[in-house]
Image 1 (cartoon, rainbow, N blue to C red):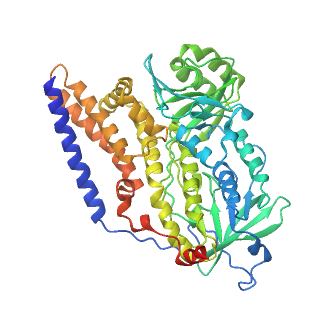
Image 2 (spheres, rainbow, N blue to C red):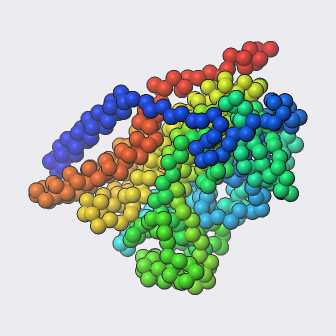
Image 3 (tube, rainbow, N blue to C red):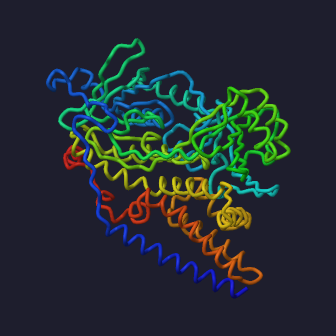
Length: 535
């Protein structure tokens, strides 16, 4: 027994040395500068200048912020800025109720942010939202329950699951109650640029007329399929898998008010309630192609490959949902936040940063970003000095990192660990993860607090991830180490490093672990604003 502890200590020390060597090399590396054309952006959109030589229409004087998109991020932001007294113009492509198979689970950390924004009543019984208290994890017929650490919160604090469209519509209704916010249906085609500064947007309204809307600050929240993001960041979009969505009816989950994750083959299967009578099922299919729904291949795949892995309590309802035929698919995407600070404009939500939706962290990141942005903008009485505002808001990209990088890294790492693999080392890591979480105590409390958004500490995530790897190696050494077992343990550690270090690199080692070393972390409001506040 002592031998195992000594071995664990040695491995942790080695991992710490490797980690800090990587940090040192990253910090001393050369920074790559990326130039962006002033006239034409990366995807061919022309940043249009006003035809009247800079004399802007009257609408510029009546709008403080233009928001592109009224999904979760756009609607919440519009309501928040409107409550702060800003004059906001929101342009949304389609104001009818969305019908999506993702964005249906809000973690407790995200619900706390919703309360901060005053929007918690948009995710309550009025839309038949369901409380979620944790997860049930299944593997090879075994299961373990992982509860959110909610002991220090009021009884209302929990996760929430719901129909995405109902949630968005409730927020849009709240936005429409604010007299200083205009919510309009239209399709934004171009960002308007003058002398390197974004002045607003060009869009087509519901009648098809080409319009322009001007404001000192334009915030783009047009979602994962954004047509405008290339103007404001250098996107590196990865498509690791697809979700196949079904709705199960007339059944109960084995663990009430919990999300269920089946570590299936080839990849995870999810179940969670979205109303008092419906359960969402999401089947992950690796890659960018899925069996055809139209010719029946998808139904066959679900019956022959997925159904045998579904818990018995849900099997009948699952097969009935397949027979019903309302099968939806959606490509999953991940994209690190790689902003190009641009005077007069900002990116937010899925147009800016995405992660695999396995952990349901997207809305938590977006709502956390909105709270942070609201607080940064609050002391500013005037947004018209675009260069000064842009420099000030560079702090946003650093201050958001604890929450966003923790949730992003966990989502990417867990997805890779939870997928089945023919590699014995990867399979050992998967088994070790399930058993580690099943130990209870800090072994389940710690990871679930990270997943829930209640503990946004990247270092805690890093330590728990490698604690799983060390635990897996320790299991291999019992009852005694052999050359084969030691080699497999070495490959397990290398495999774990190969999973998490690329994700950390994409998030930014310095920004993730040492944000206080970045000058923008301490950026104060523009001096002019401080003078205005004094009067």
